[in-house]
Image 1 (cartoon, rainbow, N blue to C red):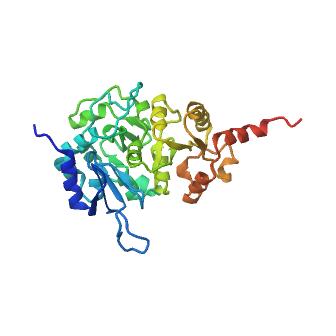
Image 2: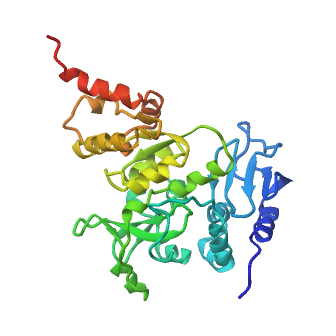
Image 3: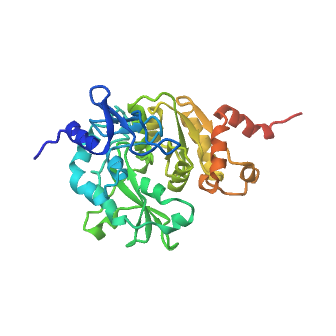
Length: 345
């Protein structure tokens, strides 16, 4: 068995795809960002792109793009099959070097071994229904969303905080089956064993993209929490990069534990319906004592009509940013919620 020197291998990748590299500490480098240019279209002249050579996590202090070694390889133009064949062992070794945290609840440990990244190659087709709904190909690419033509489902990869592929969730497009399904028996179609015992409570969707911020200590951060895949992608597409999904209205104890350790201000943005309202109240009760907390409110065209059921992906970009910028703290939100029902006598 060949033992990989992760730092050497990541350094070789950096030398190939980055320019203006400078050392920044024992295992960090700074370079010109390969993913953005100045507003006038001219290239960057000063290094703003930070990368950790021991695990491949990166963050650009200018454009705020961030990710892990897999997303870096993907976004510099290497196709998924080539990434799997050439860098599969390196990706696994780099993931093991991602900062870990001791947790008595142990929410970040997979009961099942990770799925191979090559699994996503089975779902390379683009789900046109999401394009028709306003999502861009870039957004679907960033979240590795695909389509399973065998089971007629839009596929969403489920990753742990290190970015390891721990499962696949499929959204039915026929209307004849369970709407969302975490795959178990489906893997048998591709001659893989069925996977049982998956615990959704331990998945906070897209949280693995937030860890580069922690590594490079950017100071105060904010994270928007939504319910589902589409809401998460829509808020991200609107320009708010730090967004995660509960995959439901209920915030589990494991998800709370992860959020507490991100060192962020939390913005709750659950759906505008009875279930989302109840979930917001319970999330406040679970997190308010340990996390700075704000509540994003829906615009008047929705908020003033309780009978309307809405999600973040039903809002415009301007409405999302207004909701974020004007979000009250949870105490004010609760006071305003109860004020109409208080007696004035």
